[in-house]
Image 1 (cartoon, rainbow, N blue to C red):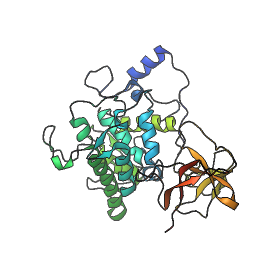
Image 2 (cartoon, rainbow, N blue to C red):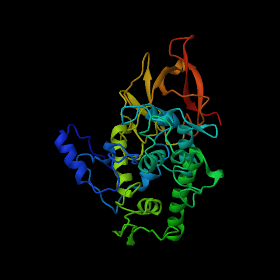
Image 3 (tube, rainbow, N blue to C red):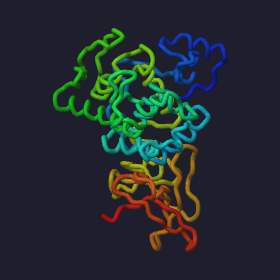
Image 4 (cartoon, rainbow, N blue to C red):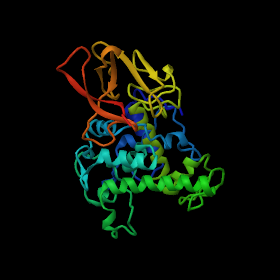
Length: 347
């Protein structure tokens, strides 16, 4: 999948013209809208196709972002301010950890839940805890039979995130086993959306998304809005598809299939490492850094030399990829300075 470049400049007149031309049912000018104006701006060269919303490899890219990357996103959003989700916890679980755990458990790209949270409730763009509380505690309407009747057992952003990820996994599994979702959405089969538009999903991922977002352009939470916010966030994060699967774009600590996948200066792909390999870089001092990319540390491995490995937090579950563990290692050439980094597990 190729993602378009950000629009470099828009005059006020062009922006107003663009916003007025988008046929969606909610806008930032409405006081009851949770959206940001930029959510309704389409990136240059982005072409919406109602039949193809997201490729399967992207929807199922569980390793796209770890909990630390999600936390950084909440702290530095595309809206030039932090989201309240950076500090919010539900049932004792931080929002970034809840998203990541749900993604890993259900093999779904974590940013699918994040984009949905913005499209439905505007949670990413909200700096302070919003009201009514149901916008957060029942963000994806799991356990709700009406606007005012919801199951207390489903309350909490962590439970809502897991519910959405689980539903998407069930949709994909249903298509794989029976050819269609519970609602009849299937690849290659024409269906009619709630806003009376004919759609023929190109693939299982698009069908799975329509099962949860069964309207193209009816307003709050529709599939166009989900698609548009996804494009904006992907551009902001410089996400270009599954690492190791798209042939490019892997940073230090991320999965890879060969040296050409690793874009950090001096990085190579350690294909013998578990879970899809890892981009590493030999070092004697500092390590490559780039805004929006995971931080790394020049770890000392004795006679083997120094290697840049991704930093981690041992107190945060999922801080390292599967089959790796977070462990303190001395800095190359030092016996006093150390950092926690992701290394191959002992198991």
